[in-house]
Image 1 (cartoon, rainbow, N blue to C red):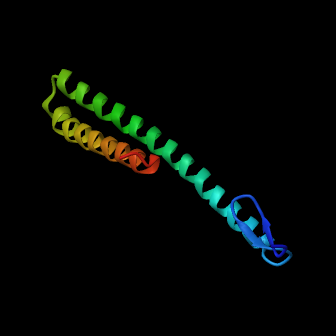
Image 2: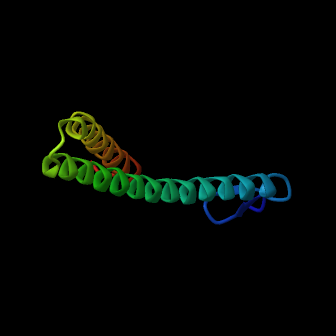
Length: 97
C-alpha cells in the first residue's frame, strides 16, 4: 500500500493527512503531560490541607481557651476532609482503582 504512511502512533494518507495525524498525536501527548502535572498538584494540596488540619486540631486540643477550640476543631476537620478529597483526586488522575 503506497498511499499509507506510518506516522508513529498511527497511519495517515501519504501526502494528505500526515500533518493532521501528527497534530492529533501531539495533542494526546500534551493531555497526558497535563494529567501528570494535575496529579502532582493534587498531591501537594492534599499534603497542605492534611498538615493544616492536623495542626489546627493539635492547637485546639492543647489550647486552654474554649474560643480557639470552637473555631479550630471544625476548621481542622474541614481541612482533613479536604485533604481526603484531594487524595481521591490523585487516585482518579493516576488511573489506579
